Image (cartoon, rainbow, N blue to C red; front, side, top):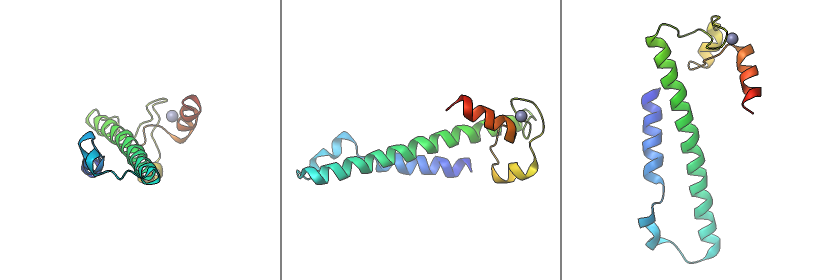
Length: 104
Ligand SMILES: [Zn+2]
């Protein structure tokens, strides 16, 4: 899972138009706009892939500390069904809900 995300990030970073790619840009403003939104979309995917990667790395760290499968907030065991759906889940459903509200 971590390797997949690393690959995704590497691919997206490779696709991002750098400053050096400027010579190939069409002068038409509509085209320039579509290129910009494409770059924005890539940026958004890259951000979410990075965030996901952080969560996976945190889950791996919990595995190392033998706290994997425990809610990081209340310490209760996270139900297996939830871990199947979200192997990188750090919180039980109740704490995740509270956490999501706090971080909105
Ligand atoms: Zn909890």
